[in-house]
View (spheres, rainbow, N blue to C red):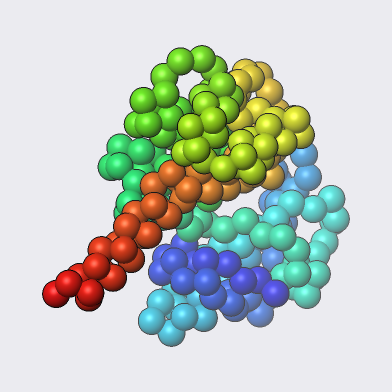
Length: 212
Ligand SMILES: [Zn+2]
């Protein structure tokens, strides 16, 4: 069924479809499959606002039942901007924007920003020489990240998604590839900043309890 993070309230809700069949309109690109769209109401009772759900289909006609089980895009879109509280401000703001790009399907923007975050993370750890992949390797050499994290960066690259280099403007950038790269960015931030900060707090509170 049509569940999504509502673009108004941000809550993951079931979107209640209108009782009517979707309307069919030409693809705004001027070519390609027609667009089917309909209104949905947010089922969060504190919100209850309407959004437009839409999808493309080659069909001449889609019934309401056929329409509501299809993968849907939404207007307004829910723009995700997660916080990274233990990450230095500039880096966390950029990481948050990478997620915002991804949530509206801006795959290249997401990847460009995720790369900038990985770059800035290495710099924060005084690793400034070489390519981005060499910086990732060096972070592993210095024990800042695990071997597994480094290997993941290599695996993403070998899978054709270029985290480290590549020509963003010329390469196709499927959303799944961008999602993998942003997820890699998240685990890197977790490992380099968030996890150590969490352990540090734990140790502090333990010491405070022992020596009040
Ligand atoms: Zn809502």
